[in-house]
Length: 558
Image 1 (cartoon, rainbow, N blue to C red):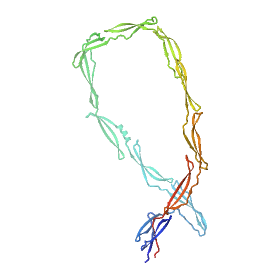
Image 2: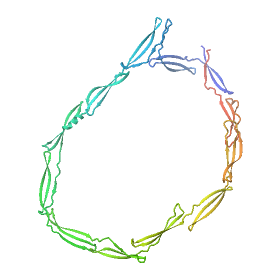
Image 3: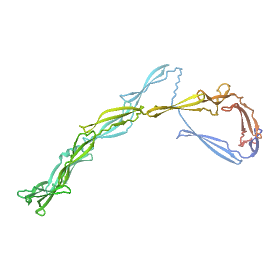
Image 4: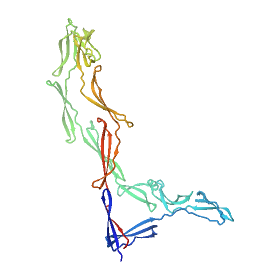
C-alpha cells in the first residue's frame, strides 16, 4: 500500500526576511472529503444548507464539524404575461382604470379595457370588476338613563357598509327602568299624619318606590314620634299694697289627643309691712362725709314675718375746684400783685381762702442765634425787643433786629501739576477767625522715578511667505511733560520664519536582522522668546511579521 506525507511549514526571520522550513512526516490515515447537502423547510419557507467537514488531529483522529446556513425564499408579486401570435400581430396592453366607490351599492368598481385578436384584428373589449365591501359582525351596546322619567334606553350598534366604509348604526333594542324618581316625587304628596290615641304618639305614614327587576314596587313605612309639651313655670304677681296679698300663678300643660292643653293653678299669700321710715343724719369730720341712715321693714316669705332693714347712704362734701385770679397794674415796670381766691373744705362745709403774690412784669430782650445753613456762608442773629402788655398780662414784642455774621469759609481744594518730571501738589485751605476767612496755601513736590522693568514683545510669523519676525526689548522711561513712565524699544532682533525641509532616510535592517528602521530628520520654527530653527529626529522601527502558525500540506501518494 502507498503512503501519504504531511509537510509541516514553519517560518523564521533572517536578514529582515521570512524564511520557511519544511518537515515531512509519513501518515497512513486521511479524513473524508467535505459533503454538502441542501433541503427545503416547508414550514418556514427556507433553504437549509448543511456542510459536514473533517479535520485531521495528529495522524490518527478525524474531528467532524457541521455548519448550517438558512436562506429565506422571496417570490415576486408581479405577474408577467406573454402572448404569442402566429401571424406576428400584437395588440395594445390592457388599460386598468382607477378604482372608485359606488355609493349606492357600497362597492368598489374597477373598469379594465383590453383587446382581443380576431382574424388578424384587435377587437376592443371592456370588463367591470365589482368588489363588495364586507363589514365585521361585531356588536356593541350602550345604555342611556333619563333621570327625570327614570327610563333606561338600550341601543345596539351594528357595522353596515355606507359609502365604501363600515359605519356603526345604532337602533333602539329595549326600554327598561333605571330609577323611581318620578313615582317617589308623586308619593311625597301622599304622606299622611294621624294620632295613635292608645299610645298617645304621632304617626307619619310615607310611601316610596323601589326598583326591583326593572319595575318600581310600592312600599309603605310608618314612623312613630313622641312629642313633648312646654315646661311648667311660675308667675309671681306684684304685691297688693292695700290688701297686702301676693298672688302666684303656676302654668303647666297636659297631653290630650296628641296635643298640649294649658292649665293654670292659683295661690295667694300674705306680703308687705307697715310703711314707717326713720331717718338719722350725722357728719364724719375727719373724712368730710355726710352719712344718712334709713330704718325700714320688709316682708320675708321664708319666715313669713316683717324683718327690719337698715340702709346707709353717704356722700362726700365736694367744694368747687374753680380758682379766681385778680391782677393789678405793673408797678414801676418791675412787678404786679396777683390775688388767688379758692374754696377749702373744713368739716362738712366749704370756706373761701385768699392768697396774694407778687409777680414780675419785667420783659427781657430775647436773642436767637440760628445755625449755619448747609448752602450758605453766613448765619442770622435775631434780637427780639419786648414790653409788658397790661391788658393781656404778658410781654408783647415791639420790634425785631436782624444781623448776619460769617459762619463758614469756602471749601479748600487740591491741585496736582506736572513740572519738569515732578508732581507739585498745592493744598488751599481757609480758617475762620472772628467772622473772617483767612487763606493758606501749602505746596509739596514729589519726584517721579520709573522702575527698572524690562518687557519683551514678540511678533508672529505669517501663514504664507518666509518674511522674518522680530523680538522687541522695551524698557521704562520717564516722560517729563506728563510725569508718567512709558515703554521704549531698546533692542530689536530678527528671527527667521522658514527652516530646511524634512528629510526621510532610507530604511535599514537592525536588531540582528529582525526589524526595519527608518530615520526622519526635520526642523521646526521656534516661537515666543526663542529664535531660530530646532532640529528634531524621529526613529520608526517595525518588526518583520511572519506567521507563527504551522501549515500542513498533504503530498501526493507515493
